[in-house]
Image 1 (tube, rainbow, N blue to C red):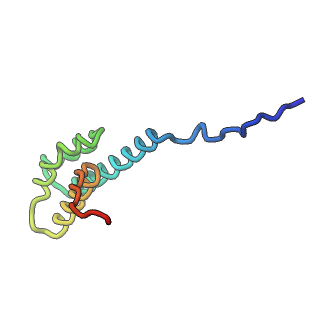
Image 2 (cartoon, rainbow, N blue to C red; image 1 turned 120 degrees about the horizontal axis):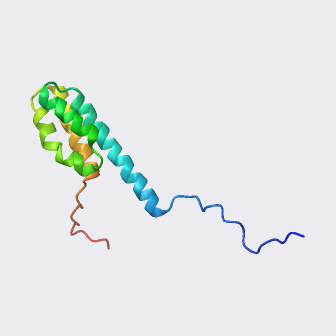
Image 3 (tube, one colour; image 1 turned 180 degrees about the vertical axis):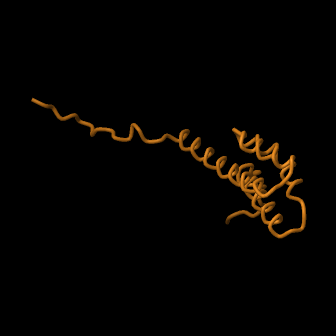
Amino acid sequence: MLRNSAAPRDYTAGAPTGDRLAAIAARRSFVALKLTFVDAAAVLDGAQAHWLRQQVRAAEAPVDLWLLRAPLFSELAGSQPERRLLRQRVRRALEAVFAEPQPSTTFATV
């Protein structure tokens, strides 16, 4: 004879925990940042651009891309609209990953 347990069976054992969800979100933001860098480096020419593309492909963490931001911006210099757009995309992607905490305002809710 089978007995019914008092508590229902827990089916959430395989569900992601808070730490795992945070890790997944961090990985997704890194991948988005890396794809932005790959797209920006793809339009560049020359030996420095080749080196930069290799470094971007080898990046394993957001900080690796952070360290490549200066050479990338240097290679993307110029007043051409497509270069300006790529610089904006890279800047926004970096801000999304390396967001600084916003200062609190002096406004109070009453």
